[in-house]
Structures are given as C-alpha cells and as structure tokens.
Length: 573
Image (cartoon, rainbow, N blue to C red; front, side):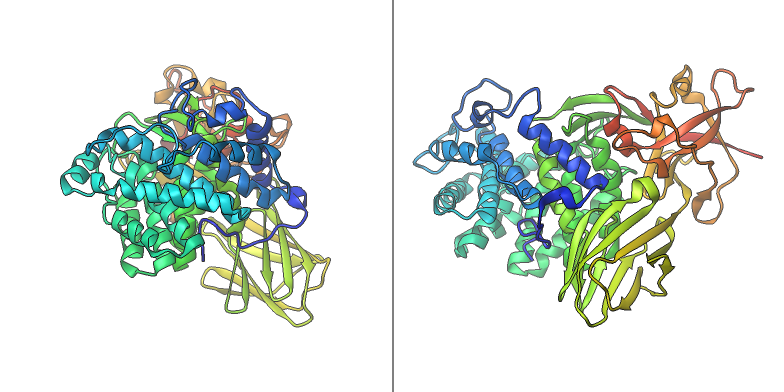
C-alpha cells in the first residue's frame, strides 16, 4: 500500500481542477515556502544544517530542515504538476556535502556515548526520509546511492543505542530515545527502493524500542509510530500493527489528544502548547491506520484533526508552528516554526488529498469531504469541496464506463443526513456501514452534488464536567477577540453562556450568524458560524451576544488572536 510514499490519485493538470479549502491552504503554504518569508528558504539557508554553518537555529540537527524541504517540495509536484528548479538545485548541492562515512553535518562523537548523537541522528533520519521521498517522485541513481550510504551510517550507530540502559534512560528523558527510533520511517523507505533485507531488519529492531512515557516529545513518538505502521505495511508482521493500535489507544484514553484533535507538544505536561509537526503526525497516523484497518474511528479522528487542529495551526502567512494552550482556550501564537512545522505541514497536504477516496470490492468510496480524485475501472471523479461555504461537495465525472458502477459516500457522524443529487434529482441509495451507496451508469461531464445536513452539539471537558464546548458539523467553534472583542472584557472567565439544556446526543440549537462583511475572504467558514447568548462576568444582569466561529478560521485572522472555547453554561428559557 506504501502509505507514506505513493498517492492513490494521479493529478492531471495541477491544482487548477480544485478550489476547495484544502487546495487553497496547500497553495498558501507552498507559496510561503517558495517565495515567502521571513526567513526565506534560500539555498544557503536550507543547506546550513548539512554544511554545517551555525547561521540559523537548529543547524546541529544535521539535515532536519533540508530533508523536510526535499520531501515537501518533491511531493508538492504531485499536486501542482510543476517542477521546481530550486529543489533540484538544492539537491545537487546537498549531495556534494555528504561525508565519506555517509552522514551529513557534524559528527557529534566518536565514543560510545549515545547522548551527544541525538541531534545528529534526528536530523540525518529526517534527511533520509527526504532523499527517499525525492527518489519516489523523481528516481535518480545518485539520490538512491546517497540514501543507502546514509542508511548504512545510521545502522552503524545502532550499538550505541541498543543497550537496555541507554533505551530506558533516554525514554525517561522526555522520550528522547525516539530521536533515534524515528529512523524507522527512512529505513523502511530504503527497503522499498532497494529490497535489501538489512534495512527492514534494522527497522524491526528499532521498532521494539518505541514506547510511551510521561512528558515525552509527541512529534518524536508519533513519527516513530508512523514508521512502525510503515514497517507493518512492508513486512506484514501483525505485532507491528498491534503495537501502533495499542499506543494509539493509550494516547486517547490518557486524554493526550485534545478536543479539537491535537496532541500537545509534550505529553502530560502542565504548561501545554501545540506543535504543528505532531498535529500533522497525528493526522497522518490516523489516515494510515484507516488505510490498514478500515475502522471508521481512525478516519473520524483524522477528519477531526484536519478540519480543526491542523487548519487552526496554519498561520495567515502559510507557516505552521506553536500556540500556547490556556485552560479555557488558546493564547496568541508562540512561533512560526519555519525550521520544521511549516515544511512538515506542506508535506501533509498530498497525504490528505490522496485519502479523499479509496476503492474496494468494485466500489468507489468517497471518505473525506475534501478536494481529491477517485478512479474505478474507467470511472474518474474529481471532488471540489465546498463544505465550508455551502455544506456541499461537487463531484465532476471526468470519465465514465458504460456499465453501472457503485459510488459510496460516507455519512459522517456529524451529519444527520447525506444527499446525492444529479441534475436536480436526489438519488435513492442504500445506507450501509456508514456510507450511502448508489449504483448507476455515470456520464462524462455530469455534476454530482453531495449535501451534508449539520447540527450543533456540545461536548464536556474531560477534567471539568461543568465546562462545555460547541461543535457545528465537523467544526470545533469558539469565540475569538476579532469577532467578539467584548467577550474578553474582565472578568471573562466568569462569563456564562445561556442555553436550553442539550437534548439527546448533546444537540443544541444556536442561531446562525447572518452572512455579512465578516464572512468575506479566504478561509472563512460561514457554515460553522453561530450566535450564542451569554451573561458577562462583570454585569450578569444584561444578556449579550457573542459570535462562535470555527477554530480553522484562525488562518484568516491576524496574529496574535486569542480564543476561548470552553464555557460554563446557564441553562434556562
């Protein structure tokens, strides 16, 4: 299945075929990486970590930024249909900097102490993935040879990390052992392109050390878990899938995945902030588990993360990064993490695009309400998602066979109904296992509209039962300073929203926010806009109104913008 490396859809004609939110967000981040700033991704800037040259932060993580850049831009070509001369130019310069031993950057130590090598193995591990991904899209013998030399170097360090005492000490130190085990992903990739057993065997040995510990760096753990899932896909050892599913369940049960679908940067930490890389990893991991198991809980989790946490993390510049997490919401941004999150975010868009459809048993399934392309024995459908604006998705039939073919459209848990309409006529279908099935002869040029019926519901805070939050459709919605500045007047923490008690399933009725000037511009989600009445903490005798907006609209807002989305409620008429 090649979860991380091969797209299930081949794009013809580039992203001009789509105009949905996913496409616009991809284009925003791609433009940031190609032409934006500060800082700009110039040749010297990108390659500083493989020279190395300490003119920017984190060059000690040899190959980290440069490897992410290679993979992100290589896979961007699969969506745009374009090539990037700056990518090939940087690759040529990078290959000339590989050391005879196979590594890039500065060798941290020559003794048996593993600790000084953590930055080196992390950066070179990320660079190995970048080289493998570039080769997947644009095969070149020189790239393959460089990747194999680098993989062999990483395996040569294994004696430093193999002792049980080293593993336990580094796991206890914020899980930094996973700076080493994240190399699984690249080693499995090497096995894909070479079929040499030593890479799969090495990845298998590393997988045995992946474990959850309090306070660990979530990006390192989740990257390692993604590698173990790749290892299962390649070797089909059931214990590897079981390992990933067990740790997934541990994270969910322990409350390490926040209500809008993001794991914090450090698990179990009291001073929490989000990280774009780990949010993207959680999205990837769930899409991978969905592909391997077809259990809807993984697809639903991926959807929640995509439409909320991942989009919430994207800055108006196209960067991804960090925001402080407050008890009742999220504070201003901490950083646009150009050194990792921006590039990891860019690399994530093709993964999501590829997951919009899948095919099985002569059925074409439309899984995620995003832009994408699906194919089934001569039938080619292109999805242009307009969920945010109209609550619909437009499917264009680009090619069709003469015989009837079956399309199955997922009815998400957040939708009370799904309708499939062709030429103004709703198609009768069979609702089966969460999908609405229709079978008919399709015609090239037809337009199929999928409409989702949405409602508003509440969820309770896992640690504070008196706190609640709102979701409308798939969107986690809250109050931000731009749309509702008065809500943040002191003492805002004592504000109480006024509701009629939620009904069965947590459903509530909130009035739509009438469309107006506030809804103009990209990344607005008018389908998710709602009004809520509240009693201000400072003058609770005068009911006021606040505007609830999807967290994903943060990309359209200036920095800094504060959000509140956990509320206390006053139930009454």
